[in-house]
Length: 146
Image (cartoon, rainbow, N blue to C red; front, top):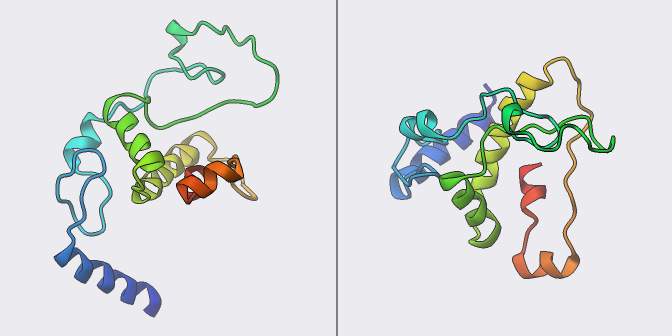
């Protein structure tokens, strides 16, 4: 373990004594190095079913019937966009809760390593925002996650 990593871990731990780390989904105090509490980890709307890789719906509810062009091969996501997940994305985009981006990035990394285990990526890209929107918000949430 590098000295830089050790000092960063010590810094994070000391900081957590004054500003405890909280689960982004429920607000419960969690381990200084954790992201999500164990209750939310179990209760979150994880995408587990067989889904359509074009529209994201479960195959039994898919209405697109793969009638899309060939702009992309497939979409993936770790969670359904409902309830606490939707609230956390909203807080990231509109309430300056930028820490949520790091947690979402880790969740996306987890699913990418599962779905694309045999693919070696050169880079991860994001969709740019309009300059006016970027100035107003101060950041691009997609860029933070990427």
